[in-house]
Length: 469
Figure 1 (tube, rainbow, N blue to C red):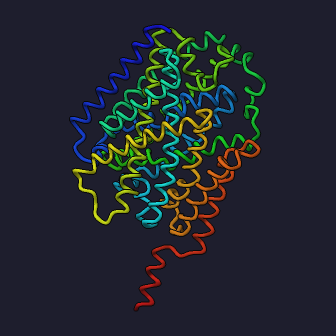
Figure 2 (cartoon, rainbow, N blue to C red):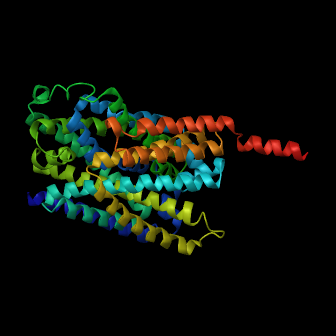
Figure 3 (cartoon, rainbow, N blue to C red):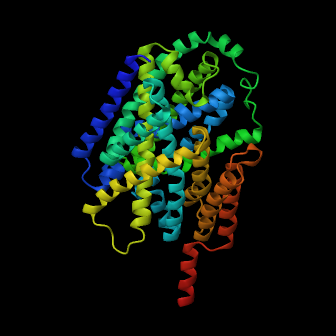
């Protein structure tokens, strides 16, 4: 491995650490600064941080793994959930900013009460710790290829960096390092495409180098299995607490809403480039681990300058995405659970320190969890489904369906979360189906049926008033 790769990646990591320290000293004075950047992020930074939060290890490692195994056409369907979800978020972003909350369970409490907040926070933690853990593993792959250290040691180093950055600068360091990483990954991917295509023999080389299954729209999967890969991504982005926390960090509701437009086009661009690069990797490196498709191409299939840029930006994407999910899950534990069960609010001078201690605790737990899943794609599907089936239907109902009731959303959250755990852990995915195919219909059915059989809070209040009068 060239010393240039090692030098560029290490220098970029040092830059990220310095940025974390800088924002910790200059900007982070209160818990609001730590969690939502003082609610003063401008639009350009918002676009960058939304992109980097979403396009982390889930694209560079997990998404690349799907492309490498099932081909470019099936990958279009796999990735389609994100732009569709972003389009819907455009109509929600300003409303989320206007609520000025720290977490999604806080938002849900406004309409559905304290118990909903508590249950939602528990299931978000179960999902987000899993998502954080596969960022650690993705970073381990990059450091293994760039420096030659073991994946296990690379995973540990990535975990330490993620925990450090999330603990120091909070949302400020995450948002601004996100913006820089987004810029670098786009530049690196765009410049790298011609070299990768040339090395793979152009479009003709790709066509002859792919199997018949990889050239089909299903990639050799059944339609049911393909839907099982599409839905978790779609559901996660619609309800992702990180998205709503970014919206809450915007200067104004208008900035939050307009940032989704740049997010939409940026996602299309990065995913299109990623599909092209990973497809070239199938032809050039037919026997590598699927998780390393883009990383291996950057290290061994592109000119050193371009490859090192992509590798540095990739590891930065992974680290900042890990920061986001770690910071977000810490907010659930601190604000929704610890403070939620206290009669008195935690004093502001203690709240910032508590946030930082919880980040360290959850980071260590995420590292341990990551040792129990065979691949990044496997843990990605579990985590996305846990969130998408348990939380997303309730979030959408809170904004879009006035008839939803507290018993309905509580039943939905518990049904979706338990069904995911049962299908993944106890049954071990019968028929090769991802759990979303079972847990989502059960969650939505529970929400609709129980809500229609019970009264909304507003109707209950009106009924009580009539009786009292």
